[in-house]
Image (cartoon, rainbow, N blue to C red; front, side, top):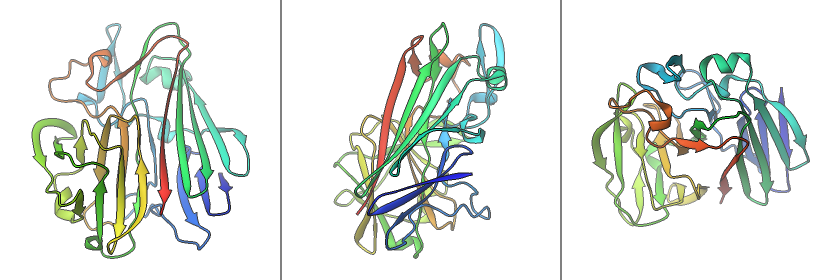
Length: 283
């Protein structure tokens, strides 16, 4: 089942399974979201919750009990309930259950709110701690943008001039190794060689937006004010690019297994609510 929202400029289609954005089109019918061809990657824009990336040994400990949680968590594999909709907005929700408590022993509600406004789609996250105790979590976005022309015809531009140092993954965990992107006028031409070691992971950035250009013309900007971290990823020879604003990232080999000590983790008090939002602007 899907829900479609519209305004005079754009339409967005969201799948109830995973509350996943599967289409963002202009009224000229240009599609900006990756089609999800499983030959490369069978997803479009999954939500990453209650972890981002991979845990060491895919496990953590809480109150001396070991729990197993797969990469990027379980929200992307759950059926969300549509709890509110208008012509240009839709709100989806999941709550903790017997099944989620087996792998993540914290009570929560997660809402995703999609809203179209002129040439923007905003995607808001609302996490509420429904339990009696503090709750550790990460949350992140993973939208894949369709790049229908030659990959080398595209470039990305960061909002600010800054040293763009990223961390390398080893066996899906964050290593201590870093590299720097070569930047000219805040712009980086896209090549598949950039991603030969998997995603580019920025633990911290001054820039709070990133623009994709096609043949020198800007086509969209992802705005991620408030998100401390960012991933950029594609698969070799795949015609898409993921721009991923995050609160948190994969474990390192030094992680203790205690989520409360995990680098980049968010801590939410009992009955408190966390809010964040990013947006996609079509240019």
